[in-house]
Every structure is written in structure tokens, then in C-alpha cells.
Length: 442
Ligand code: UDX
Image 1 (cartoon, helix red, strand yellow):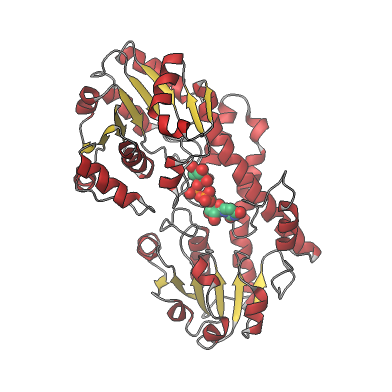
Image 2 (image 1 turned 135 degrees about the horizontal axis):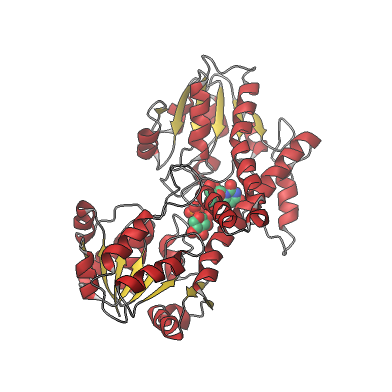
């Protein structure tokens, strides 16, 4: 099938490359000419596992091309995926839809009758219906559908090729059929598919993210209770997660969620629910957000307490800058928020991360950075473990103890082996566990 993918950010680039790989003819569109040129040369603007070879293969086969022109897009195909960003509004509340709106305004007039415009971006419920009204004015006989993505950063290609489910939000059986044809290889492989109206499809995405964010904040709230009760949240979470109705995933207590999706999505969801008169139903999301932010302040407070109540003049080695392991993304990264707060109170903070140092330097130039863990921790009075990269679990505690001034570590991700760190000469602390924690009982 012929299709365009409008917006070659994270979602769009992955979608375009995957669609070309399963045999479709794809034209990727972006307003950024430099990005288009680089994509046309087979170079991805972002690092994502498995994306580079897919992109190169698509470009070499001629099935994947790129352009900056929406007029060319309208001429090229009658099926258009909209993957432009929907950032948080400047007032911090709802979702900024100006990029989606701009695409409809420009793409609409040259569209042919019978064209299908499919949104993939995460949007407030009701957006597809509003865009449909506008598109009908600009190009009668065209349809808007919604087909949300559920990609995790670091696993986006795998999540697109082998999704856990597909959600097709349409207003007609025809549009549903078109989308089933697009994803035919996935459907043949047995991927569950849910056909819905556009409002339900939009909601599946935000409700899923809200649920996962709530699960994380729930276990972090339990960490606070454990701290007050002298209990161990890691054992609690494992025991809770063994109940198959609860499950262990997204029940890992720690510094909480960050990134480009969860924080923004739950705020936008609460705002939209208020606008449509369902505010009280999701008012708990404000609490989910507050619990999440509190994990950052709790970590800073605990770090300060471990240093005797004052950061001034103290040296801190920070392990991790990315918002999660396997990613170089530092957007709303809990790790950087904590590192910056300690630095703002007078600590000398040196940060290590296996992948995110360049991005971290750009957003937090006030911090210092180190290319390896021993350099980050040299002479440290305290080490903070803030992003759960597997390489930090493989560190030799005894070797690292030799480079710090005081072998004192706060494991804000609750995933280092406390016993091993204790045996390596460290005083090991974690949130939600009696201090000094020993690593729990497995
Ligand atoms: C998320 C959703 O998973 C994805 O479906 C959606 O499309 C976009 O948002 P992503 O932001 O890539 O994807 O990250 P994810 O792996 O889901 O983790 C989100 C955050 O939660 C990270 O900061 C992670 O460290 C944190 N987290 C996750 C926890 O703090 N505890 C957990 O138990 C799990």
C-alpha cells in the first residue's frame, strides 16, 4: 500500500521504517529539511535499537522516501499517518495541538476525495472528532481515524513489529478495513486487534499510560509507608507482584517515572477530563503526579540527611542521567532533577551515564560529567544510584570503595545488591527499606 507518515520524530521515523519493511511504499514528511536530508541518506535522527538497519534497508529498496512537502504527500497517497508531537502546553496543563492542527490545515486542501488521515499522536479525547469536522470543511469526502501507538523508548521497533495489541479507532467499516490491510502481517501473526470509535481509541492510550503511572506511584507510596513503618518495600513489591492479578511489572519502587510521556500524559488527561465534566473521575491522577514528584524530593532529603544535613562543599558521584535505562533521553529525568537539586544546594556533583551524557550536558550545563564510573565517584562523600542501568549492577563495590572518600551509597532505584555492597565495604541505603538496607530477602 502507499502511505505517508507525517512527522519524523520518534514515533514517525519508527513507523515509517517499519511500514516500509513490511512491504508498503512510504513517503515520510517533515518540515525540517535537514532531518529529511539525513533520513533520505538512511541516517536516523535518534538512537533506537534496530532502527538503523531498517531505515537503510527501506531507503535502499526505494520503498522509503522523504520529503518536506505536504502537497507532495497528498499527491503521493490517499492514506496519511499523522505522527507530529503533542507537547505539554506552556501553562503546564493541557496538550498543545498546534502541530496536529497545522498538518490538517496544510494537508487538507490538496487531499483527494476518499483520503484517510490516521492520527497516531497521543491527544486529548475528542481531538479526532474535531479534526474530522475541520477536514470535512477543507476536503469533503475524507475521513479521520485514530490508531494510537504504545511504543516504549528503546524497544520501539520491536513494539511496532510485534505489538501486544492494535487499536483501530474509526468512524466507518471502510476505514477499519484499510487499517487492517496496513497491519495485515501483524494480524496474520495473531496480534489482538480492537476496533473502536475514535474517542475510545484516543482514550485507550491515555488510560493505559495513566494506569501504569498509577501502578508506579502506588508502589512508591508504599515505599513511603514502609519508611514510616520500618518495613522493606522491595520484599513487599515482590510479594504483591507474585499475585498474578497484580503482576510484578511497573511495580518497582524507586525514583519514579519521567520521560516524554507519562508526566505529560497524566496531566493532559486530568485537564481534558475536567474540560468534559469528568474531572472528579480522574482527580486521583493529581495525586499520582504528586507522589511521583515527591520521590525526587525524598531522595534529595535523604541524601542531605546522609551528609549530615548539608550539601555545601560535599562531593557527590551520580550514577545515571537518562530517565530510564536503555535510553539517552533526559526529558523530565528524575535523575537529573535530583543531581541538579544537590548541586543547587552547594554540592559538587559529577554525573556518569552510559548513553545520555551529551543530552544531559545540554539541559544541565551546570553539572559536571564523567566518562566512567570511577571518575564520577572519585573522592565522593556520597554516591547516588539514580538510573537503573545494568552496568551499575555489574560494578565491583570493593573496587569503587577504593576511589571514594566515604563508601556511602543511596540506591534510589532499589535494584543494587545491598548485601554485596555491604560486603564490599559500603554503607548501603535505599528508599523504603530499613537503613542500612541489606538487599532484602528473595
Ligand atoms: C511509556 C509507555 O510504556 C508507552 O507505552 C508509551 O507509548 C510512552 O510512555 P516510555 O516513556 O518509553 O514508554 O517508558 P517506560 O519504559 O514505560 O517507563 C516509564 C517510566 O517509568 C521510566 O521513567 C521508568 O524508569 C519508570 N518506571 C517504570 C518505574 O519507575 N518503575 C517501574 O516499575 C517501571
